[in-house]
Image 1 (cartoon, helix red, strand yellow):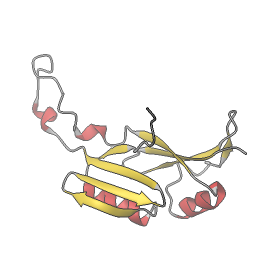
Image 2 (cartoon, helix red, strand yellow):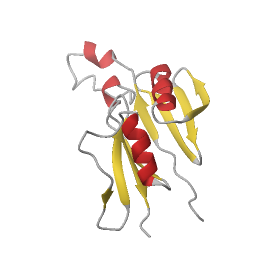
Image 3 (spheres, helix red, strand yellow):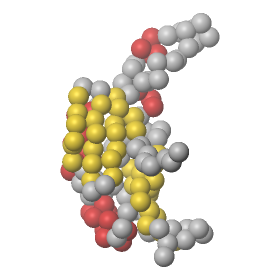
Image 4 (cartoon, rainbow, N blue to C red):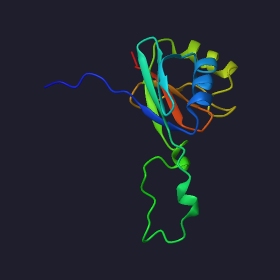
Amino acid sequence: MKMKKTIPALPVQSIKESMEFYTTRFGFAVRHHEDGFCILVRDSVEIHLWKSADESWRKRTDFTANPICSGAENFLAGTASCRIEVEGIDELFEEYKKQNVIYNPSTVVELQPWGDRDFPALDHHRNLLTFYEVGK
């Protein structure tokens, strides 16, 4: 037995808006999309986005008898994170800095105690994508 790959699946409120954001700001291409789901790719990286837009919980008053449990509530968008391995971290950082997706203005590429260099970026819902380059 051998595990071979992982694909992050991030919650978003609008597939259409998210496809636009990920293609224009993060440089991904859309490989597949439908109303509630899409697959984005850039080089050998793949990210799945799923629609998290259930607002029915807002109408509930007794959460004990009727708990929030659809798994697609709209407040989930912006609560996910993933790490993406890259080559050329400094070039990618400059690209994303120009696209205004870096975590905040003081963000830099940092050397971590385990030897990797990384930086955080946010999508339009505030899902966290940390890009890292393995230490040499």
